[in-house]
Amino acid sequence: MVVHGDTAGVESVRRNLCDWLTALGLEAAGATSQLDRYIGYYEPYAESHEACDRDKAFQTEAANVARAVARTARAAHDGKLVARDEGLESRRQK
Image (cartoon, rainbow, N blue to C red):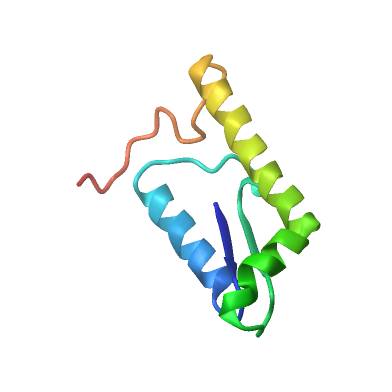
């Protein structure tokens, strides 16, 4: 999950999206798989893509998110990933 913005709210948007996906039964691919950053903080929106293009550190972090997700997907596909709650029954069935 990569969330970026230029003024406020990236942390809460990332958390809300990740919480929603977890509620749907998806599992995070580790701490590196979630990223929120400000890019072009309070700069004009029209220039935000240029700020993103210049931010090589953010690009590296975003690539690492993709790598973490790919590794986890590969492990799941190969049967090497066990859900942390596998075998546990929820007391509140939907």
